[in-house]
Image 1 (cartoon, rainbow, N blue to C red):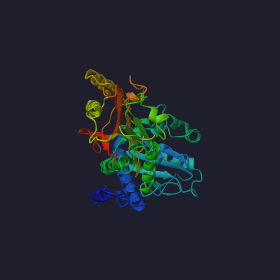
Image 2 (image 1 turned 90 degrees about the vertical axis):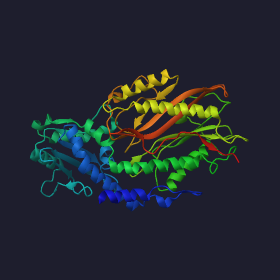
Image 3 (image 1 turned 120 degrees about the horizontal axis):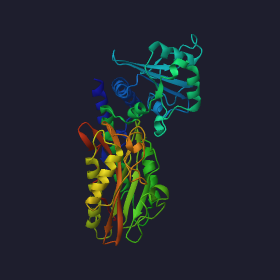
Image 4 (image 1 turned 120 degrees about the vertical axis):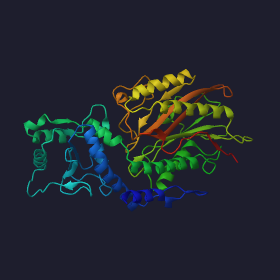
Length: 446
């Protein structure tokens, strides 16, 4: 029944596109969003977390934070009605594999939503750390995992003060049981459930539809509209829909009369307040946040010149080469292969076909630049140390971010097709969460 309930709510937010754009009524109310978030979280705690703890061979996991200085992992565990931790919040997850049980406890004065039960009566035990020690001794775990990691920032959430006070409180006999929760924390952050993927499909559809509207004659008037006008239109649209964006969007231009700039130009300086003209090849980078998930999308549009009725064939062919790089890359997704292995194989195969690819794909989910398998960085095309050696796991989502450079005779210069789409890797292989761009969007000039 619960699965049907969340599916019905997901169906409610499928987009209806009209002449006035995306109907705000199709976005869930704050109350319904909270209900959906808590349903997803309960499913993750009860059905996903026990498996992840077994897979990483950890039977006790401590997540510790103080208010307004939350561990990135704890942020993903708080219920919808908890916007922050309260005072110092200590979460304890204990997995008894033999009994097939999992305890979800809070060494805090309150239950943490409906999923995590308070296990601290301050009147009986005034010292919060000593109450934690009591809980640990009662269960006698083989390992006590905490969130510290040298190379994965999201898994490095325990702060110096909390770490020192924890270690001071623990009896010496328990010190040897303390281990890094790095693999478990990454698995928790990167693994998506069926319920989340039902929501993700809609989230990507919202993203695509905002881009469609931004890259249209409704918003863009050649000779008048600037790149900043489009950027701030997108920001305002997100706000008007009651959503959020996790990074400031960018819009940049390639045109026949100007030299090709580095692909990171739009992420640093960008084409700020540049007037859009007929014949421009536009590119955007845009993503939104909704019910704990994030999107990250790059697409292209072309401003038709007077007399043109479609995107010029030479640009369409260049775009198709960008799609081909995507196909080569995602066909190499194999569970257990490292990001570096997939990156190098894909680059080699692309170059063998005469392409000029660059791949810099990152995990995507509860964070935009999330934890998990890193598949290249723009300045590390030979492989990414450590993070690129992390193996690919199923039930994970990635921003399939890459580009291909192609020489255009008609412009007598290179053009760079820069693409990014959310993609899911599961038991049945790779698929885009909700399709991908397969043709440049034409923008009418009159």
